[in-house]
Length: 302
Image (cartoon, rainbow, N blue to C red; front, top):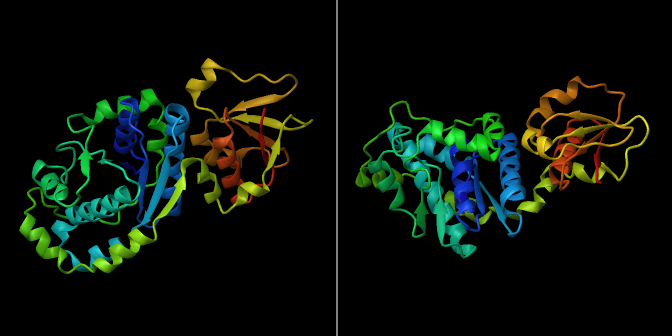
């Protein structure tokens, strides 16, 4: 089970596990941003559709707003980052046991940031009983970005909303277990248990339901009616391999990761049909646009 944030590291580490033949589920810790969760689900859905669709994969979202608040209020500034990671692994460990999953996956790379020292990771790893894999532990950042570009997740990760609720001014790089455990005695573990118990489990194919059920109000059309314009939202790599051609219809090429910013600039009097190969990404984005008040949107299902 990959602990995914949608950034370069967690997306690439997820891919490397999939590449190795591992059935890779996803666990996301919601630190308080709906936009972030939806963006992360897009990354996970993309990875599943492109590389992993033969497997039944779950996406688990754990509400961590209360955990962040507890850490900010009760934990020493320099220890907050390590404590947060330990809380995440405690929760992930519980989720993994519930789903009978044998290992956790993180996107950490040794010394890439201050919290990712060997000493800190050793203290963090003392928490879970489930084995922790770090496929990127020796990769440089540029190597990770290069892989993201190759597999198609670079544009996702560049546009992921950042949520920086727990940033220490002087984070420790040499965490001591006894110090961390002393700090954690101030923490209300009932809040962590509550977060674990209220985690939301769903199949990766069900993530489109999270757009306030707007997808049910978006028309699914099997052909292009007069006056409608098709928007091919597939990744540029897919466009090159299998370009979409529909006789008598105008086809715009706007990749999914540019759709949110570009759609408001289109003609509001024109009806647009979103297209992708499997229909999942088009439904997801159409639902999101509909939820934002755009009623001139539909999905093309060929």
